[in-house]
Amino acid sequence: METQENVVKNNNEYINSGEVEDSLVQVIVSIPEKSSRLLAGLTLLLLIPKIILLIPHLIVLWFLRIAAVIAGIFGQVMVLFTGVYPPKVHLFVVGVIRWQTRVIVYITGLRDEYPRFTLDK
Image 1 (spheres, rainbow, N blue to C red):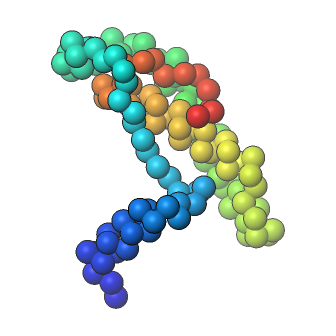
Image 2: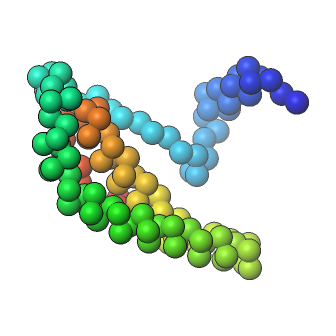
């Protein structure tokens, strides 16, 4: 059995070697050219207004997460019978996760820009 150090070393070598697959998940939060330091400093005070601004996102994401769970179960059944995960289902579930990540990044103050209403990148 490999130790955790070996696994981390092997994963770092794998990622650094450039052999990254399309299905590998990478979360990259780029640093914006202009950043509001005041907004970043007041993140705790602005948490409630940010949540109020994000109410439309949270409502839509609530329904999309339910649909993503159903789509994921459908995808698992398709894998069971056909051996292939449907690409459209994959794109939908990944899109929901991307959208949710953009909302979380905004609410935690990592980005100042308001998240987009889209499942695309």
